[in-house]
Length: 75
Image (cartoon, rainbow, N blue to C red; front, side, top):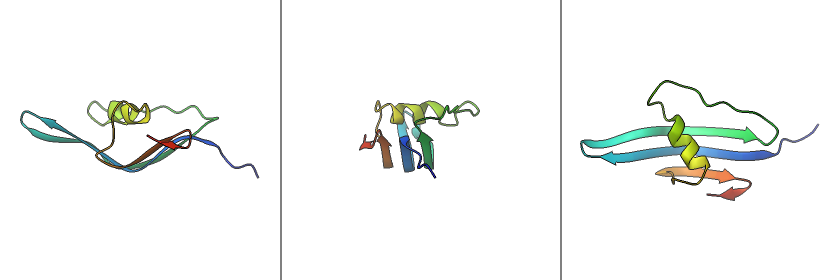
């Protein structure tokens, strides 16, 4: 049995943003793994956190809580 090599993973990730009218919770409790030999699509309705998740995986943003790893390194 071959073990899967992970390109990225996130564990119990939450991301909140402050706005002029308060706080927006873009992600709550997200846990996911992305294999290095897999093609993954992130789909969902507007405002569901797709871009927030991708920004965390790219290292552009940091999670409010939880952890993100890319290539075995915590970002």
